[in-house]
Length: 474
Image (tube, rainbow, N blue to C red):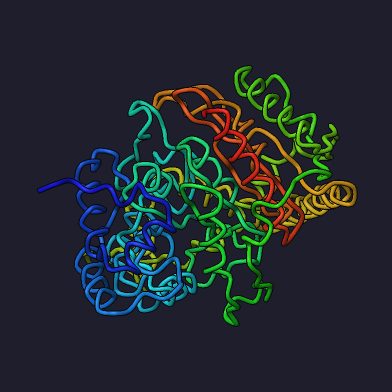
């Protein structure tokens, strides 16, 4: 049987083949699952949705294809996003028998678009980690170098797209968990404005930071998926009703855009090769008459401290619901209710999650809530104001996405600066994208940050950079 490569085609090319009935949705799925089998050593998936996917394909193949570009397109879903009657574990032992009774809002929307879910992707347990090593189901492997991490916590989603087993994936970003693995795996990942995408059906880590985001092969396709998942949801009280066409500025001239670069983000803590490549991109932008200035933003150095206080405090509250009684891990034995919950949590949670819960409980206990959490919220507001002041003068902020390319699994070095590059965006509730810029064998990305609800402008610049890089390689 001749091997096909439909998944390597552009979204428009695949759509035209489906519309003219030259291929079927089933053909795409055949290719997906064949590739998943070939790359199973990457451990990108926890659960495959094979039987249901083929049922959906049979239904779609009997229909006429309209102008919906997402019709029949395979997508992978991070395993902390609820899928009705499909195992959803958040990569934790405590949820290894959890079959949700409803879909997350984003899953409802992608089903409305006739996309086909092929599986649930591996991740750091409860999204706590940046290497994908804390998963109960084993670490995910970087397809560019199998000795290296894929990034986290959305590592499985990033690898699913990078290994071409899915055209799209959904991830979640609490402190860089979409953007950092996108950078390490040479794909495009967007963290939308806080409230842009409904969090209904996302297993919560830190409710004031979490945001679901699209992961894709290129900028245009990322915007297409974002278009599909922003529809209003009354069940999420933080969700804003702001729908628009995120492709509207793609391809528009970028001349006269004003771009700021934080001085702190291009310090020598970023590896020399990434700094040099970033400067090359800046030169290309300046040749396109983009105005570029270097600026200072307050409190960037405090990002990790803020994240630990706010993130772990909120995590300890959110994870209190996992007790093995309402749902989750079941154990045999004659225990009192208190002993039972203690046993379930001891067996069910991994070491990283336990550590964060204990720190979070300490942060929120008694006077500590005022001493740490409330003070962190004040500082967070000051950081947000500092970003907003920059956006009074500039359209966008750019920086390296990570301080290095993907590191080895046994790397004991401190990579805190990667968190400083990513976390402030979550603290300020801003949208940001990671796009590939590496010319080397190991990928790394560039970050573009916008003001709240300025995703279209981010896509405008991201697409222009992507095009310039493409022209370099001609």
